[in-house]
Amino acid sequence: MHLERRDFRFCSSSRMLTALVFILLCVQPGCGQTCTEGFAFERRTRQCIDVDECRILPDACRGDMRCVNQNGGYLCIPRSLYNQPYRPEAIPPEPVYPDPSAGFQDTFLPGPPRSVEPSYPRMRSTVQCILGYALAEDGTCNDINECETNSHHCNPTQLCINSEGGYTCSCAEGYWLLGGQCQDIDECRYGYCQQLCANTPGSYSCSCNPGFILNPDSRTCQDVDECADEPCSHGCFNTYGSYMCNCNEGFELASDGTTCIDLDECSFSDFLCQYRCVNTPGSFSCICPPAYYVHEDSRSCEDINECDTGNNTCTTAQVCFNFQGGYTCLNSLQCHPPYIVVSDNQCMCSAENPACRDKPFTILYRHMDLPSGRSVPADIFQMQATTRYPGAFYIFQIKSGNDGREFYMRQTSNVSATLVLSRPIRGPKEVVLDLEMVTVNNVINFRGSSIIRLTIFVSEHPF
Image (tube, rainbow, N blue to C red; front, side, top):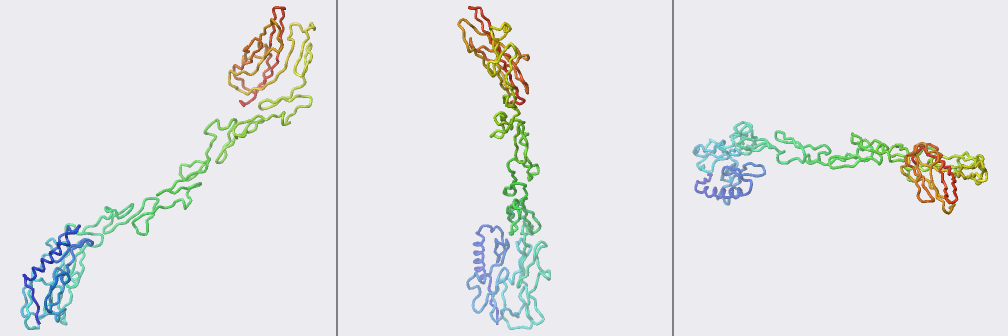
């Protein structure tokens, strides 16, 4: 038996083909790493891996020789000696291997160099194993575990991985080779996490912002529906990463952002209600003083007409007079002598009666109501002569009752005048005015007067 030897010239063409394959592999992007002959750079692991020449090279071994791939090379061994120790007649010189510290990205220990030429003499009792194997007592060649025997050339930052006939130096997961040293990969820099990322030696951990939880993939985050836990006292609206509380009408959100407190609408304005505003949970209501009721608008006050409703204390002999916020019972008219009653609201003093001289001819009784604090000026009552005499003219004046000078008469024509409120009057108050109309006729040398006794009931409230 003999071993076939490949001389340098024959292997050079094979190596050129191998180099060509290697160059083609390195044309791809990311092949910035340089590997020694017999190795190619793998982008996935970012390491130099062995090239299987037995599979790539056509007719790597000829005849009855079998190709055996080695780290960084291959061997041609007779099939009868495959995996058996061989006994060369003379021990070939010690082969020269690449220096592991000469800048390789992955340090490896290849099999016998392709430049070693085996000899085929007769068998001897001396057995020699190929590089990477050790001779056992039974005469077989067993693989040497360089990682356990610490006979590898991996630097302290690398991991030694034993293989059949050799070993490989690589970096642990989460590390990559930079400048001949295994350095930690900062996964956070490359966006491994969707939100928060914490880099750790050889790894990383993801976490989420408040309002999110980590998905089962431990990288992405999903929104938390906080409203499912009912954090709000009224309504809740879920938002991306948070939530918002809202309150029912009539309530406002407290400073804690979740509790709803009653809104005091009455404190906003003095004009919500005409009289008085009463706050209620979530709303408000208007109330009115006695003798008033709340109008349909739920805010303004309307006078209750006790004379119409019958809710009064007047007798059948009296007349019920309603005014804003109350009523009064008027007795039957009684005229003081020398006046006599001529109607239910008028007294007359006859001209034939000497006692009536220099007295008003008639006294007419009228009643009206007035809201407290009514805006001024305001026309409130009108007088007019009902009988006109040729050559006569009329003078209108306030004869009595205007002590505070709240009123004045404005003559609107030669036969009429208007009572004007010039200053506001605050109630409740009762004002009695004697409004006089003086008739003057110079043709017949006549002068006479008539009185309207006007009683004004000023209410307590301005409505």
